[in-house]
Each structure stands twice: as C-alpha cells, then as structure tokens.
Amino acid sequence: MIPLGDLTDEEFLSVERDAIRRWGFYEFVKRAWLSAGLEATPIIHGWHLEQICTHLEAVSRGELSRLIINVPPGASKSTITSVLWPAWDWLQHPSRRWLVATFDDTLAWRDSLRCRGVVRSDWYQGICEGRTQVATGDVQATQSVWNTTGGGRRVSVTIRGKGTGWHSDIQVIDDPIKPGDVLGDPELARAAMERVWAWWTGTMASRRSGPDFARVIIMQRLSEIDLVGRILENDREHEWTHLMLPMKFEPERAARTRWGGDRRSREGELLCPARWDARAVSELERDLGSQVAAAQLQQRPAPASGNVFLRSWFTERWKSLPMDFPMMAISVDAAFKDKAGSDFVALHVWGLHKGKFYLVDRIHDRMGLPETVRCLQALTARWPKARAKLVEDKANGPAIEQLLRGKMSGLIMVTPEGGKVSRANAVAPLAEAGNVVLPDASVHPWAEEVLEELVTFPFSRHDDDVDACTQALIYLHDHAQPTYLEAMRRLAAGEVRLGG
Image (cartoon, rainbow, N blue to C red; front, side, top):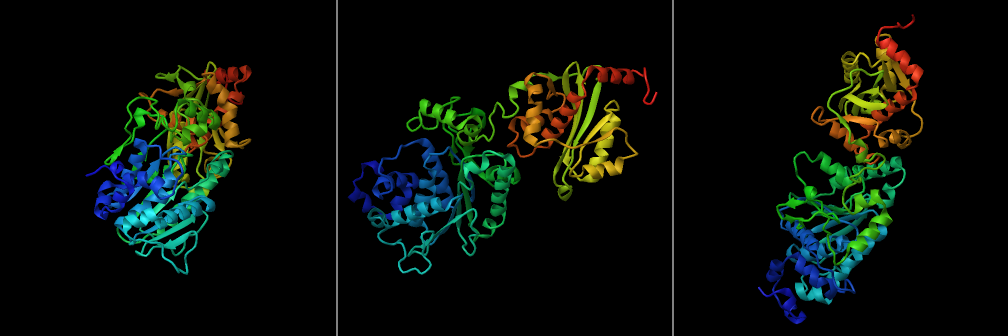
C-alpha cells in the first residue's frame, strides 16, 4: 500500500473507498486536518492521537460498544471525536446516526458546524464521490441537527437538553460537565455531578437504537464521582474499555487494552513533548493548582499526596496497640433515612494515648437502621472502655438514640458545627503533626480504604469514614484536658466509681 503522505491530492482523490478504509481513521485525520479546511496549522502528530483513533475505529467496526477515553485538555479530542469521526465513519456506514453531547450549547453547535463543513468540503466530496452529502431542503435541519443523503444523521445536545425523540447508533459524550462547576463548594459540585448522572441514566439511556448501539465518553477527569468515576464504580461486568492517557506517565496506572494503550515506559514521561514540553507542563501545573492538575492532567481526581489530608501525614502505623487508653470513643456516621440499606455507614473506634489518636477498629458497609444498631452493640461489647458513643444528630442518628436509650450508656448525640470540609480542616493539624495513627495494613487491610478516603476528600466517592473520623477526633481532642484524663484513668483503674 502506498503511504498516504506520498500521494498528491489528485492521486488521493482517485483512490477507491476500500483503500481509504484500509488506511484507517488516523490517516484520514492527518489528511483532513488541512485538506478539509478544518485547521489553519498542521496537526502535531503523536502516538496518543493514533491510539485515540485506533480505539474509535474499533467502535466503528463493532468490536467495541462501550469506550471511555480520558485525556488532558488541549489533546484535540473534540476535533477528532466529535468532528472528524462521524465524517470518516459515514464513508463506511453512510446511514449511521450520531448523537453528540457536551456541556455547552456553543461548543455543541461549533463542532456540529465544523463536522458539516468537513462533509461539504471539496476534498471530502472527492473522496466519497458525492455519495455522502449534507441533505438540502431538510425541514428539520438546524445548526444542531442535520442529515446526510446516505441516511445518516448528526444531532448535538447538551446535558441540560432532553434530546427527546433522537435515537442514535452511536452516542458520543464529549466533556459532559464544565470544569468550573466541579471546583469550589463541594456540595454544589456534587449536585452538578448528580445532575449529569441522572441525565446519563435517564435521558441518554433511552436514546439508543439497534443491537449494535455504542457509547463513547471522552473527557478529562474532574472528580471521583464524575460520570466516568460513577460508571467505572458500577462496571461490575467489565463492559467498558478504558483508555486513560495522563500528561505524565505513571507506570502503575498504565492503560492497556486489546487495541493498544499507553506506549510510554519511563516514570514522568510526557504525553506529547512536541505539544507540551516540560516547561509548558510545569506552567500548567502551577496555573491549575495541585488538585485540578491531578484531575485534568493526570486523570487522577485527587492528588496522590492528598488534598485536605496529605498522605505523608500517615506514615506511622500501629501493629500492636498501647496497653491502655485513657480515653476511647465509638463514632457513628449513619445513613440518611431515605437511603437506609443502600448508603454506606461507618462506625469507628478511636483511642487516645500520650497525645496520639489511634484508629482501633472499624465497621463499614451498606446498612439500614437495624444493622447499624447491631454493629454499634457489637463494638460496644468488643471495646467496653469506649464509653462515649458519638452519634450525629441527623440522618438515622435520632432513631438510633431512640432504640438504644436506656439500653446503652454513654450515647452522645453530636450536632456538627460547620460543614464537612471545615470539620476536616479543624482536625487536619492533628494529622499533620503525626498524631493520627492508622492500623498497619497487615493488621487491618481496611486501613488503606480509610486512608484513600481521607486523602481524596472532599472529592472522594464517599465521605462516611471521614465523617466518623473527624467526629471522634474533635470529641477526643476537646475532652483531652489533664484533669479529665486523670479522672478517666482513675475510673478505668477502679479507684473511683460513677456516682461515688
């Protein structure tokens, strides 16, 4: 086969369509970049673009039906996926219907018009010999909806749009959420991501047609509970292929798929130095900040080092506990009433010894009210010196108190002050000083789950362990006065009795 780059435009236009198919999508992209009037400057080649095209081509062939691609911003993903891919695919499948979604009307219309411009170009019409054209006189044609003479269609929608009535053979989700909506207040960010999830599982789930229906998501990561995070968490049947290409190579996270993957081998190797050299990446990291850079550049929604809590603060781990604790407490983060049985519940046992706070025990599972009460009773029996039982006075907390009042001593209903983030920041200095000690993983493997939630907070999928932790640390710290500790020591030694 003659290399594409060795052909003149006239020779290229005379080649049969089956030869174009053999060249593949990436070769089409390289030629279309300038020939179709799409861009004024040449494409900056890179193996990452070839890998993106290879995986999209596998979708076109029917080998892939569920594909996630995570790449940094500025990787030409929209031009390749939302503009050029439908145009190339119509050369092989002229009647294919496309539904392309993004977070913004302006972007949706821009890429729709650019795709239409490619199809109308003399270069493209020379390739397809006029077989695929933009349909004229189409009464429903708009800047977001248009058809082809081959029976194809391209529809653009936004996350806030309904997309009602438009079924598709291939769905393309190109950045479903605006980065600015995920930065700032965690509660507002969570609400924005919940809207995207509801749209994905509701509106978009019903906009399909035929047994060969395919879905492709291409985006930068923003949070552990963004669309990709939620899909991967629920992908128990491993239906999705995940091509994840961070700006700097991380060997332990290298993407490997049936169709290729990350071609780098050295830690920190850049994705495309010709486009982003070391200086440019450094400037990006500085401008974005560690949290955003980790998400958007590295496709890791929280910095490896941590956010509110840094990983380096938890280097000390216990393999054997101190002989005695002057103070111990059980801390319960209960499920909300309307989520009982489906939400996670965390019960922690913490002990204070010589100024250090030890996470002694933990129960963590999806459970409703009866199971939560039984677990609290079990921990009370296992750790009788944990006389304070801290239960947040919301969600199922009041119901727990009602069931156990008179049956269990030491129940303390806690009314939290401030939000989750402010409470985490209040105890962060204790961790920074090395005074918060988690179990060694060889003793309790679940310690790594707790650590990951701490260092990814407030952008982790769940925050029940963080809530149980901060509740216990605030209580123990505020009651750790010398006179109080001495009274507790004497009580534990039997030197005094309650009421005596």
